[in-house]
Length: 534
Image (tube, rainbow, N blue to C red):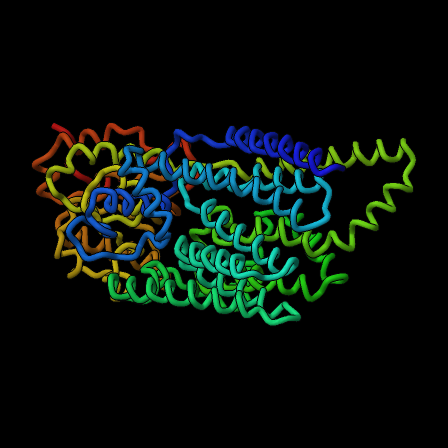
């Protein structure tokens, strides 16, 4: 195919891919609230946009609970320009996802001899996948994945074409950006650089020097700055979410998440080990090490494998780059040997398989929004934010974001004191929260065990009952899981009956990730119940 004709074909396919990706958004509800963990970051972005700094509560010491530093600043910049924070996060996610789809298609076309149909399938497969769910949830995952994808593509280009000062410098800048978007991106960038250097038969002096100058010096300066700002070397959630599983089991959990991202891209990568072991291992080092690294962190907030997602576009580009040079001659010979009827049948089977795989991807992309009870309650609380009351809650996403209340994240993701010293009554006494909300087994049925979450809930319940709080309601689908308890301080319950009445009027739906499932108030008739309306 002539260069001009190939360029026109690529352009037409790209337009189709972008339209397909935009069409895939039908799998999600963009009017739904963001995911709990995403809402936490948006609260930080709002504070940064308002000139308050990287703080959880205005006027307090900075805390690194957002973790996604560069994405947080991007959302803040758009909010400063007039956008709403949730819309800004989704716009950034959509833009990055579309760019990643284009990068995968062009990366395969430029860095491997794979045919256009294969590159189109790989890009369409990415476009219809879980990246769409991350957009709806409000996560910065697509932005992080795009940066990792571009970094990997440039590493492959350096490996195949050779290094220049310009390529080495751009790779170092992309590595720095990847580390600034997410803290684990620094490890991914370092491992990508190491794979590029160790996988080469010739010295990579330019790549080594540029990386040390840009990533090492600038990244090191950023690390020291954030350590001095926040007071701790690691992000605050790292001290709360450390995995408590045995190492082998934790690695198995992290690896099993690949099934949610799809196993198809790994097949070509596995094949390429035989004809190109050095190149494959060089490309695989950052991917495999990054996946294994997540065994150090608990997996309970790993929504749709978002922690491992960044390696997906990397594999989609690296697999063809490593495997297709040896596969293409075999493919061409096999295709030439087929009769016209056999080719027609092969095309029909391939189209059917592609349609099924893309449909499965779209199913994986569906977004289950947060249960509607929390945003409804937060909307009521927002009308009382002028009282300067404090909210203590285990659900530190939508409640603090929507209500605008000063909030204590009792799990500690956004509270350095709790993250390092734990939650106790003395710490709660400093703020005397107006409302305590926690999620778990219905309190009277909760068994004593050593699980940190249950210990936290037991502390909150004991504090509420020892400090004259009343239980407004405890909604859930079952008393044995995900019951939303709302305790209100006695003086506020007595002085603001309108607040109680408005909260009680909410058709509360609890659940964890199941919207619209009817809930039961298990606190009905409890001796701790708040007084009924006069």
